Image (cartoon, rainbow, N blue to C red):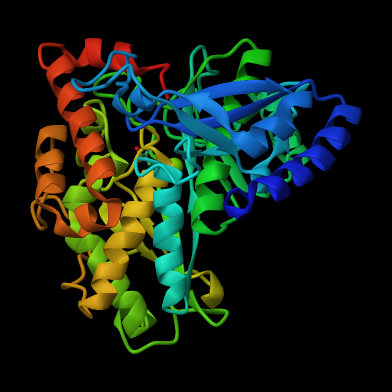
Length: 436
Ligand code: GLU
Ligand code: MG
């Protein structure tokens, strides 16, 4: 990772990149990170200051760790101190729908150059490295769903809806291609104005970066077409939600461990133990992957949002859907209960940590749920309160996240629960519709 390189090396690399992108018309570079509430925050520098930003980082107050979705602060968010936000040059992209701008994901360091213990992106990287130490790798991908207001009406997955938004969706495909993102699929989703897009899987940190880049690009292209994109878990109480399903596969020596094994549906023992670990921690993981009070307006039976703590082959109502597909090397598991309010680095880091714990304990999957889980399987927490309670009790996540990150996530969740306690579902949806 380039941010782990010595400062002088980062500066030298940035100098070369800055010269190139300035010649390509870039004036400003955005350094982005996602806070504990799931909101993407940014600092920017002019292209000629990229070298200094890569070398020393850009100032970012530590109180960002206490920010809530509505920009108020959880108790204890101190106004004192500073951190350095360092662009990861390996993830820098020129933004096709924001001419003159480039974007790079940032890692946060202390002023002395040590990793900030509350840095969510470095948490994801640490867990990926812990897997690598066991000779394992994960490929991940986050599906992005969104709803635009004023969207063309028509049937779910309907051709009418595609025709109504041909130019918009074409511009989106083009922008993503120009940004070197490989789109796998794009389609009109279930409800009016709703779409879904998936990109090729990548390593855990790169997959989270890609999810952000996709979301930002969707938002920028939408605005150019006079549309406002919402990634909120729900945009209307009682309506279909926007998921942020996380797909993952576990690999050793270039082989996908999701097939050819002796476990259920050909899972190898390692893949089974990993997934069993995820299932074991799923109630606590919800506090990372479905982190908003609004997430629980989406997480109800009958919406393909995976509100039950169970797994099943191609079971779209199970929280953990196993996909063997027709190409064995593409076998993967999909965590359906997560949404786009999640900080993707926290969600992925948490899942890898849970999987590692499952491997450590050589866990087995429970019996498969083959039909509709409603009434047949345990419900996952049905409120943020309950999910946070599970996170408080999770030794696995506490150890993996480290005390500071774990604590600050819980503080933010508790503060959002208190903030929204008296609000109606309508008011909650209104408050988060255009925040993520
Ligand atoms: N929109 C659904 C959700 O809230 C998911 C639909 C699908 O399976 O793609 O997760
Ligand atoms: Mg979908």
